[in-house]
Each structure stands twice: as C-alpha cells, then as structure tokens.
Length: 164
Image (tube, rainbow, N blue to C red; front, side, top):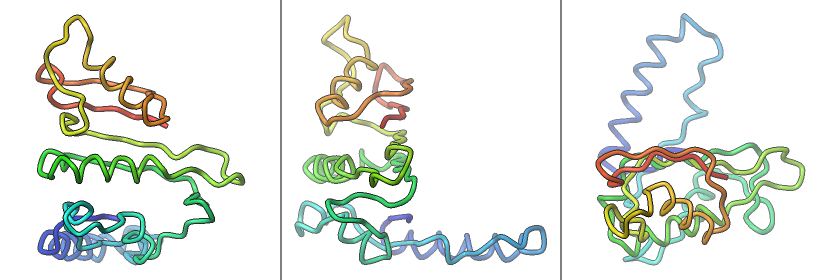
C-alpha cells in the first residue's frame, strides 16, 4: 500500500504500471495488482479526523480483531513527516504503532523510517550529551516499540531507523 497526495499517487501508479509492463517479459511473477496506490492527504488524519487504518482497510488491507495484521508487515515512512501538520504526524505514528502481528504470524510488525521526527518530539541538538539515537529510542519505547537499528544525519535532523 502506497499512500500519497492524489496527483502524486496517480503519477506513481502510471510510472509503476509502465515499468512493470516493460519488465513483464523478464519475470512472469510481476503483478501490478499487488501494489495499491492510495490517493490520500495524510494531513486529513488531523484536519478531517480520518483514520489512517480505515483508509488502508478500505483499500483492501485485512486486519483481524484488535487491529492485528494477518501477514508479516513492514511500515515504511520515507521523507514525508516534515511536510505534515504536527498533530497529523503524532496521530499517524500512534495509529501505525498500534498495529500488531496476529498470534499466528511469527514476526512482529516492523517499522522503517527515514524521516524527520521533530514533530513527535525527537528534535536535533540539545540536550547534550543525549544522542539522536537515544532520543529516538526513548520516543519508540514510550510508544511500546524497540529500536533495532539507527543512524542519523545533520545532527539528528533526519533519522534512519528500524524498529519493532
């Protein structure tokens, strides 16, 4: 599932379709129906009080009772949070962190963020000597997640992390 602004989502869909059609002769396993481009302004989570998980479910994401995902799942958030209203970022992260693997799924839901986290309180700079990694880990722990790997650039302005 790929969420983006409507115009961008449409263009991504066209580009992916063209790419897959060009490569179809190389692999019989290519099926563009496995990719869902969802036109959605993520700020609507806040300004229209829309549930991100409901948007995903309406697009076909299957969740079991209690918001549990029935298949191994990775949530990727890449260079989008700094464009959003702070309240939307906080709501989105809370909703995504509420996802849990169903009891019959052997791996927990994993998260991969390459983004700015200042709108959730993980800010670059002081207090020193607290590192960007420590700030990120504290935020994740407060949300019931475990940091697996971390790096940052520009003094902690951009984080690269994986968690579960």
